[in-house]
Image (cartoon, rainbow, N blue to C red; front, side, top):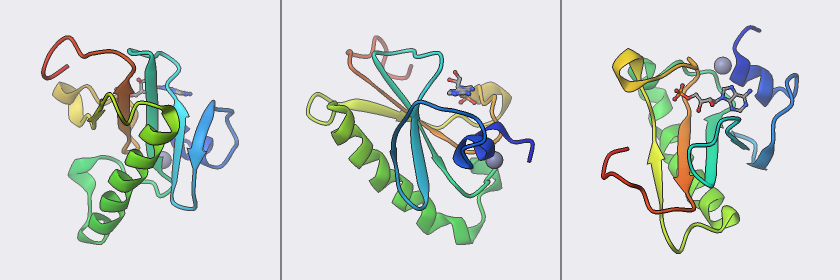
Length: 113
Ligand code: AMP
Ligand code: ZN
């Protein structure tokens, strides 16, 4: 298993886990861009938004609901936060296992980044 996020999900690589259930894991980003910067991943290996199969659509809906719970746990639900999924080179995706960035703890400087 060479995918770093699959290895984090399997517990083979340590991570600063904040929340998990049977389908998703949330852990702190090692290079936080904001006071709260959490990565949310499905345990299932899906490469990117571009690789989503029809059967993955309900899973992605549940990932959004999971993100909402993570935001509540992280204490940013009231003031707000940003959810970002990068895709491909222009989107800035580096890790090829689909993930959502939950960014919060400060007001975003720009509407899009
Ligand atoms: P992306 O550019 O959307 O692919 O985001 C990848 C993110 O993963 C970056 O924000 C990295 O800082 C983060 N990252 C990479 N390796 C790890 C790791 N082992 N634990 C936590 N975060 C990581
Ligand atoms: Zn993976």
